[in-house]
Length: 118
Image (cartoon, rainbow, N blue to C red; front, side, top):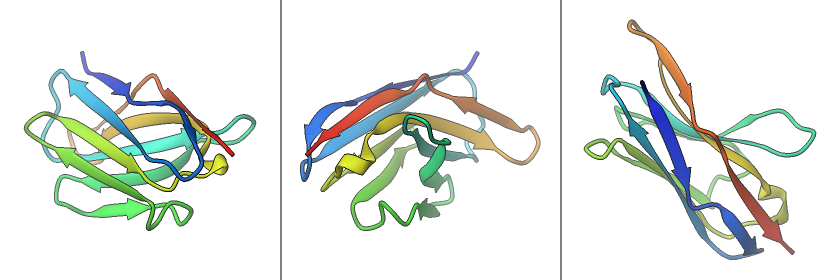
């Protein structure tokens, strides 16, 4: 049974920093993509950043230059360093790990709330 446990969310003021962590427990193949997604009230869940096991990273345009995704494969943990946060970053942030080639899988965390006050 694979579980993703997020931590680090909370209430911050605009311009401050916050770091999210997501630890993966259970058996997963090393080669995968770990990432962060977010969903604001009334909106769809959108990609924030992803990090492949090969080192490729992708960011949403809205967070480029402010957020940094990293992963520790030994700890099976992915991080999201959020700098210079803005009120529009307010959302529930979800961790995801997926593998698109056999054996495929796609797992989600329970989500952590991030609220940015102006």
